[in-house]
Image 1 (cartoon, one colour):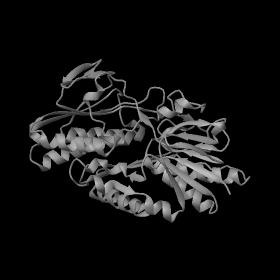
Image 2 (image 1 turned 60 degrees about the horizontal axis):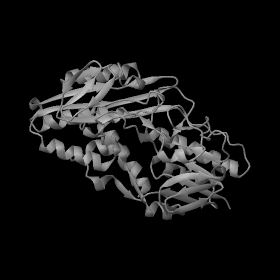
Image 3 (image 1 turned 120 degrees about the vertical axis):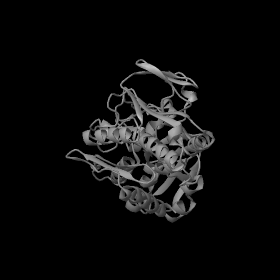
Image 4 (image 1 turned 90 degrees about the vertical axis):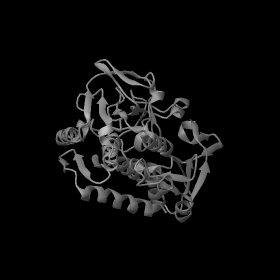
Length: 375
């Protein structure tokens, strides 16, 4: 009977656990995470408006774990020994016959003054802080932006920041106080969002113009203060900064011999196998995969990679060829509280639909469908 260990209780970790159990009913599967809880991160965008409350997005995992006969080890990974066969955690060591790492990424917080900004994608606490700040503000200037990891083009998450930007604009208009605020979108990239496709970038910029959102693009960031955003192309005053930096690998990777990409992620092949390590796989934000530069770091990709990693791990444990790959596909709805812009991209084609109410409701329906699978 094989012992499978999975690190992480996010999208990739739970998909990997579910798929491992489906493919191998007899194995012992252990999920490692700080808490037996899942947070539906894509819906953080709705917390500032009150459309969602924090507890709406938290899912206790006990029913999921019991249903799929998965053991839970509460703790944080801190290292790896014996070629991956022993995971070191804050609450003990776990031996395994196969390992899947889906512990997510880590935001790079080196920019001077970054502590003066809110990174809403970090989790519920950050979005609650944003909600409270917006409620307190009577007027002012709000800047929303994101950057990437210069050594890892894939390691950025810009889509949600467009959603926070458009959502704040919609919220202020609903409250009848939009004319009291100046909104500015900034990024060191000259064409932020072009990873979604040329049509999507044009659509995003058109949406900003229609909403009277100013832009400050293509200038390297120098830092923040409580009162301004500073770039090599100038600075501008702000009262509130929302900023998402690029991503790199988890700090605990430094305590392992796992191979790293130039951007600090785990180097994996097209089968999600970590290079040079037997029966060690990676899925989601923690990994660097051979792929086009536009391939996103998003929940959808984490699910696809996790399914491939689970299939290959179970196959390798059984002595079968581990040849499953994952589809390279970007799929998202850029939501603005009442409408949503559908964007998809694959190796063959890209598609962008203008903001529609159907897009918004599709995102809400998907949320409920996904959470129902876990509850």
